[in-house]
Length: 187
Image 1 (cartoon, rainbow, N blue to C red):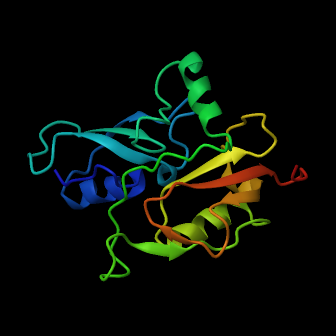
Image 2 (cartoon, rainbow, N blue to C red; image 1 turned 135 degrees about the vertical axis):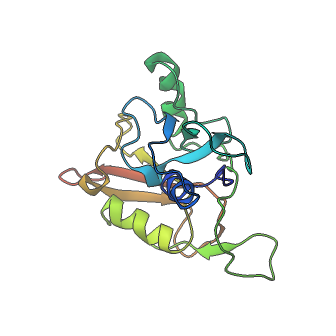
């Protein structure tokens, strides 16, 4: 079994398939709507553990981040506080474990990227741009405050972003994009 903890779910599934397991992998988590877009979820736990032989169906536990602050597992009542935690506040945001990506700069302790300007972009395009920069630790917040879940990313646009454009940002930093539906105005 390859080490897939802290990897995006889509990458983890690909790694497991490359290791020779071709059947369905059990994915636990994914919130109220389940896993709609595998690239939006991070593997927090895996069974079997790294280097063990894959005998039965592998089990991956996923969440938006693996820091314990943003759990989406459990019933709807347990999810409400987690979704509320995604709203922008003045408190600093927790930083999840970095994803396993190739390094861009070997001379620094932590790899960084320059945060691009995403305001006005379709959410899916903004996510694709960030991922092309090596940033895979992403979250979306309903900019209206209604706490809606962005099920189809191509149906939403970015109203604000954190960190700001041009900021040199560690790859492990949670990037938060405030969004509204395409036919709505940004608040």
